[in-house]
Length: 119
Image 1: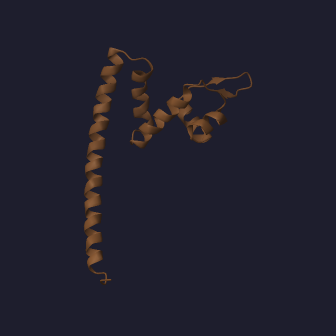
Image 2: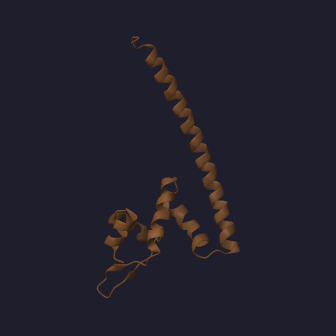
Image 3: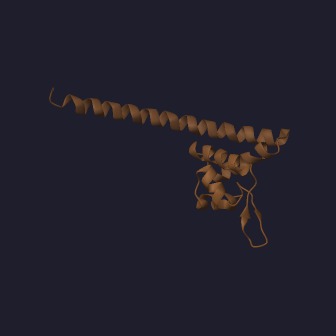
């Protein structure tokens, strides 16, 4: 499929798809005229990459994890597990920060509500 169809089917912009390819997160084949052509599996790859980005992983980290997805092996799994453990710890710390921020916001809202006239 061409890049426009992949963009439409995955809900990701053409610009993002080009970036993914530049970062080696996505692979295309080129036609004699230089047009990108993607295999059917590219839709799932893009959705997977999007989920990892949404979780806060960088393109470099995602690239480190892809060998475990593309060609699972003991070595790939060991390296990926170590990297995923680091990312999990980072996400856990971020969640704690978000919860603290939410609690501070709740407290500020409660104070503001107490200042509102009773209905």
